[in-house]
Length: 122
Image (cartoon, rainbow, N blue to C red; front, side, top):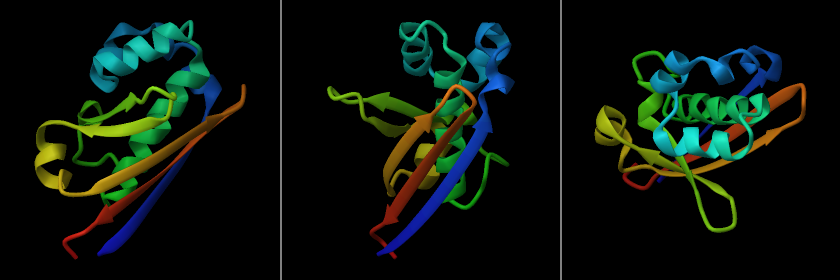
């Protein structure tokens, strides 16, 4: 068994114009994530936090976003609002055996996320 971690932090102001840029949203965020952002009035801190989570997941698997498609590093939320990882496509084929935990936080200025991944096979 081996434990991996990843963390990311972003300035929220980077996402202020991106929350209304459909091409960016379609390329980076899953449908579930776009719905989550819309439910929060397209607040840039929500979009930034989800993006941080994707980066943290990618770092936990040792890749960063290089060679990974961010839309395949999806999030969903449980009944209590806690995020959880939903991999699809090649990310699921490569890392579907890992168990993930992710946490997201933000202020008006900064967003951050941390991800831990457990590989029970090592």
